[in-house]
Image (tube, rainbow, N blue to C red; front, top):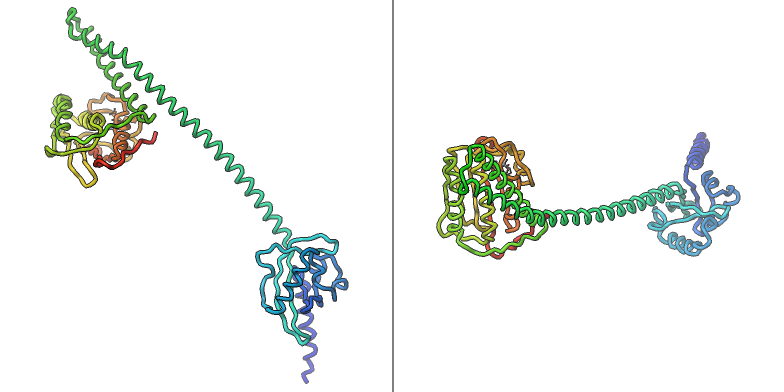
Amino acid sequence: MNETEPHLQVQSYLRFRDLLEAAPDAIFEVEQDGTIILLNAAAEAIFGYSREELLGQLVEELIPQNVRGTHQQHRAQYVQHPSVRPMGVGLELLAKRKDGSTFPVEISLSPIRSAQGNRVIAVVRDITARKNSEAEINALQAQFTKSLSEANRQLEIRNREVERANRLKSEFLASMSHELRTPLHTIIGFSDLLAEELKGPLNDAQKRFVEHIRTDSRHLLELISDTLDLSKIEAGRLSLHPEEFNASEALAGWIEKLRPLANNKNQNLIEAYRSDLRVFADPIRLKEILYNLISNAIKFTANGGTITVEADAVEKGTQFRVTDNGIGIPESEHAAIFDKFYQLGSTTKGVREGTGLGLAITKSLVEMHGGQILVRSTPGVGSVFEFVLPLRGAAPKRPVP
Ligand code: ADP
């Protein structure tokens, strides 16, 4: 027999004991009937018993009274099907100290075989600290959710107030614009009469003054009309009366009205569409859209330039395109030009004309028809504005105020 063998056995026992005693979790070795036959220092500390008090006792001693019965059943089942596994998965497990107080635990079980029969090693971890932090996190989360839903509620109230204020603003603008137009028509009418000199000749200075009154009052009228249109669109009070009609005839008539503006600048205004083109739209609004685009093209193109108005039947409906070889628009401004009151640089005359509302109105009107407007433009080369109006049956959209 090897002389060193008993010595080695003692050594490995001591190492096993050190390991057991140093473990931070409570460790128990339990017989099949639940009798505790081994425990470590952590078990004493966690449960508040001395080792002697627990050895030979049933593990049920360490379990709150109300769950003891079920525990005994579970233990019996475990003896039938022993395996390494956590205990009570999905359950909140509680253990009981000597003083009767309870605390949350996590337990893992491992069956062991020994010469004395089958036993179970139970490792019990006190998870009070973890449960406390979980509870704190849950409380914080609940608090956070509460403040978030309160913030949401406030935001909803604010949104409703803003919507209401916006509607009131639009209504106010609509009625104001209407009231302002009446006296303005009088100013325009009488300054036109003065300019005609039917009631006597004007001297040069007077003619200049009257011309200023006529130009500025017309500009003011344009501004008021655009504001009225836009406020009606925004208040959802502008309704379309779409019908199917011959787009070619209508286009020819509208372009003829604008031709003098192009002639004034010696521009070439080209019409490119076939004679039987049909469109489904509100004629008054389509005229407004094309007037805006064509007059912009004339305005932002130098003398002698070319403006082309094209129209064609496409798969989705009727396409309109206004192309010019004017001053163009930098790519960075392509979205902004459709904003209200957005004007960029100056016109080709170096004078600020227009209201900055034309494209905002145009875009809304195209969208109300269920279409979409696109711009392609390069500074110094020219611009293309293009939109398609869907055929009859495609539901027109309301603009988003
Ligand atoms: P405006 O009353 O100034 O014409 P719009 O809303 O119609 O207002 O246009 C906004 C701005 O977009 C214009 O001031 C101009 O800077 C730019 N713009 C519109 N059309 C053209 C075009 N065809 N060529 C160059 N710039 C254009």
